[in-house]
Amino acid sequence: MDSVQTESAVEPHLSTFLDSLFDEPFSPLEAGPAPAALIDAPPIPGLFFTPSLRLPADLADSVMNYCLETFFTADSPSSGLPPLLTSLLDVLSDLLRPTLPPEIHSLLFPTVPTRARQAIINRYDPGEGITAPSLAVGVSCSSRLDSKDQAVWSVPPERSIIVMSGDARYNWTHGIEKKTADYVQSPDMSAADRGRWVERTMRVSITFRWLLPGAEVVGGA
Image (cartoon, rainbow, N blue to C red; front, side):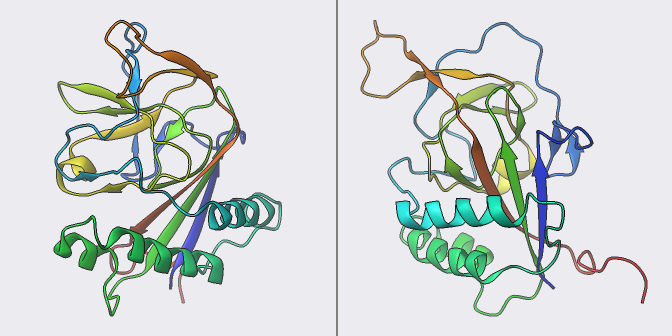
């Protein structure tokens, strides 16, 4: 059975730095101010991100409104992918087919799924940190990616689609630091122009992932 998991950084009982992708604690490095984040894909093996590839605006609005009205209420459902998210997967499959290696696309969108799929939906407001999504609906903000000896910052624009596999999926942690604004540098800026501050607003993100066999079963029967 496919399932939906919701997380909101505004709810105090949820761990702000729980890594939704890996189910492991995520602790940002305590360092000085971050360098300007680039609106581009970091050179990380297994990370597929094309800044110009966006979810259609009307679909993004529908998904965002549906998620806010459905999953962040006291009686929100907790299981089963709703039709809108199933349709979203179909759109993502078509959008990503030209940009992903065939083997990665087949892994993400198999003709006959053999495992249950989970959708993790995050909502957070300016100043709150949380783990990075696979699909970002709303305003862009700076994402931090850390390996054992390297940290990079990227700013996926709103409606961005990000695929993580291989090294990017298993050897890097992915998170969004607690800020109300991000210092951003776009590729077309001159070397003298170091960047500009961009204010954050409320954001919704969706992460799709496959569950291990039996992980979709909750409780005894």
